[in-house]
Image (cartoon, rainbow, N blue to C red; front, side):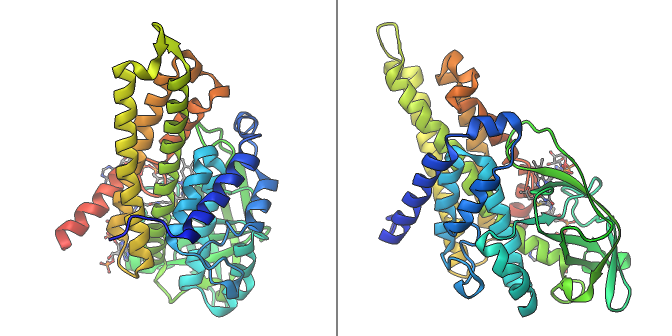
Length: 380
Ligand code: CAA
Ligand code: FAD
């Protein structure tokens, strides 16, 4: 067993760290205030290869492993979780979904552009009546021979107003339940495909979240991903990888907050000494660091499972469940360590606390991760 990162992994992590500090940090508070999508920064991340991290270079990707992916996600998320969720969705839901399950034509047409950042991707599973209960899809795609007609509503879609390519899950045969679901590629601007207003959110406010409406949207048959009826398994397998990305995001939010809290506690004085010398504060730091290291082990293990070609459904759910809990609990502690300064924007920790909450909700709530983990344990 080797807990050391390779030279290459260290270089990748440092490149992401450098980018986050020099490019993401300067405008992060303003983007959060204005709910501003980081358009130019997404382009820069594309140039650095961060939008197609694990994609084969023959499709324009960086050809890196899942360990590299989580290192990049952690570093970006320490500074800006709004930017990192765009990276996560594009990489592990959209690019992975197309690379693992798409046809060669789909890869040439869409993946090559998504992997370089020329296109941004969105993944559309959730609906007003089908969030956790994802098999209850109400959106329909009716087979019309050489095309499908899609009708329905998707909500909470990340990059919903900004994407070029949308992977849309829809019911093609209700009688077949989860086996009557398919995934489709829908291009921005397709007739009948409308983007609703942007959500005004608690956290990750720089990311763009929209409801999408499909009214008789005509999609060519060649835009269906995989064999007929495979859409739900496509969504579940893709989400297992996505959960590694969100776990790494939670890890980054937690470790970003910890680093700020440690620094502050060594500078701020109360009762004649730096506050880190008060045991109540020192023990908070000890708990934070220990839990963050434990979360890191789970995140790395899930990424390693993926790199080794092992099943990662359970390990990704465990990593997300635990890292998101650590992120939520310890960003609250980071605010506490900052006292009144923790409550204002310029110290960053209040934003990290607000951003942490979503990691317990999207890509499957914590309760859903427990369903995935427990079912897997019982099956084993
Ligand atoms: N791999 C392959 N097949 C799978 C699978 C997996 N990981 N998980 C389930 N399946 C198969 C099952 O084997 C079953 O097939 P059979 O009928 O042939 O046995 C079929 O899919 C249906 O599975 P279940 O019976 O387990 O379905 P369920 O209704 O009990 O739901 C669930 C399972 C795990 C709760 C699932 O609905 C789920 O994950 N819900 C959460 C949805 C979610 O994570 N949404 C995230 C949206 S994307 C997002 O959020 C992005 C973002 O924010 C940035
Ligand atoms: P519900 O399913 O209604 O759940 C409500 C509560 O009930 C939760 O606490 C849940 O854990 C609990 N619950 C439900 N069922 C059970 C059960 N069986 N056992 C125990 N507890 C249960 N979706 C996409 O498809 N693409 C995206 O890009 C995307 N981005 C998002 C971005 C943001 C900012 C947000 C807020 C959401 C996003 N989502 C996206 C949707 C997200 O995945 C869902 O919100 C999430 O899966 C939960 O679904 P829901 O909101 O309908 O909650």
